[in-house]
Amino acid sequence: MKVMIMGMDGYLGWTLGMYLADKGHEVSGIDNMLRRKMVAEIGSQSITPIKSMEERLDAYKKASGNDLTFYKGDLTESAFVNLAVKKEEPDCIVQLGQIPAAPYSMIDVEHCNFTQVNNIIGHNNILFAIKDNVPDCHLLKLGTMGEYGTPNLDIPEGFFEIEYRGRKDKLPFPRQPGSWYHLTKVHDTWNLMFANKIWGIRATDVMQGVVHGLNTPQMVNEDLLTRYDADEVFGTAINRFCAQAVVGHDLTPYGKGGQTRGYLALRDSMQCFTIAIENPPKEGEYRVFNQFDETYSVNDLAERVSKVAQEYGLEGKIWNIPNPRLEAEEHYYEPDMEHLPNLGFKPTNSLEDELHITIPKLMEYKDRIEAMRHTIDPKIKWTA
Ligand SMILES: NC(=O)c1ccc[n+]([C@@H]2O[C@H](COP(=O)([O-])OP(=O)(O)OC[C@H]3O[C@@H](n4cnc5c(N)ncnc54)[C@H](O)[C@@H]3O)[C@@H](O)[C@H]2O)c1
Image 1 (cartoon, rainbow, N blue to C red):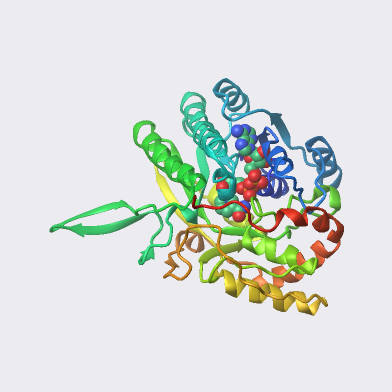
Image 2: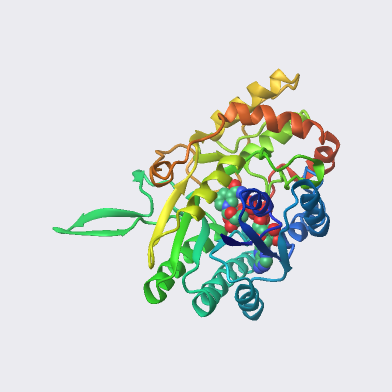
């Protein structure tokens, strides 16, 4: 299959490019290297020493014999997106090319607007490029479980049956996003549903949990590693806890630590994407997949990281700190996940198994964590 990955230089995009090419797919991708610039802007760096795209492509070719085609350019430029899609004629486009960080969008008005323009316009350009060039192409769009927020109800996969004043309907489940970034993802969902309605674009809207780890069969040498960030802006709680443990920093859940989310290992995220790509939606179908292995509270995660870290002689002390975000710190959380298991998805490793791979890998880069350590503690606040 011809697959085009938007955001191919990113944490998921680079990993997915290699993963799909190894499975025999013909892979191309786009990136404008924005993530590298944003991480530099906040004075941080990837803990893994990632190579330039040119070096990555060469290293992967040497290791596997496979070619990946790369276009450097900005998804917010419609003519560029249109040209690249026209040239490649992909069967599937995976849209990962967005700013993924809630705290980045909360810095100030410039960062809020930049995130909204970048994410919403880039996504719309892809929708129009599909309609104009490859109307049969499957769009696999990365949303986030964060679109739903934390309702006091079970969370279905996209839609639910509702009875109101004696009448019934199947409607999109309410979205309750918790940042300007999460709002872009909700807006994408509405734009995608509308494009599906008027143009029949076949689409999978993936509500993905938090992805962690560095373990895929393709990362056989340092030149092929994907990025790994643990700063307050781009690092997720689990990444931060692992990095904190390695440098003897307290593990710092925000607030009461009852915030519960879905998590999945990088390798399982790749497995899910591959299943969705190889089992595309029917002509004209819009479907929603929730995607995660397990749900954990941040306190629970901190405890699991601490326990594994102690096996490597690290202290792993846990210290809850004031929450810079406005969010429920204790709540009900019961999301469904049936579509992917029905198509054959099985989690590969337990969380602990993955931590036994991630933590020793990060220990190799202790000096690089020390160099970005000052960016771990939260300074960006949700409230005025
Ligand atoms: N990593 C996770 O835990 C996770 C969880 C849920 C959802 N997601 C979603 O998955 C997607 C990818 O996440 P990631 O962790 O790989 O992020 P990432 O920042 O590592 O990757 C995104 C890539 O897109 C590129 N990009 C951004 N804007 C662009 C533009 N205008 N033109 C061209 N390239 C552009 C960036 O340079 C970057 O390389 C994001 O949309 C994110 O919201 C990620």
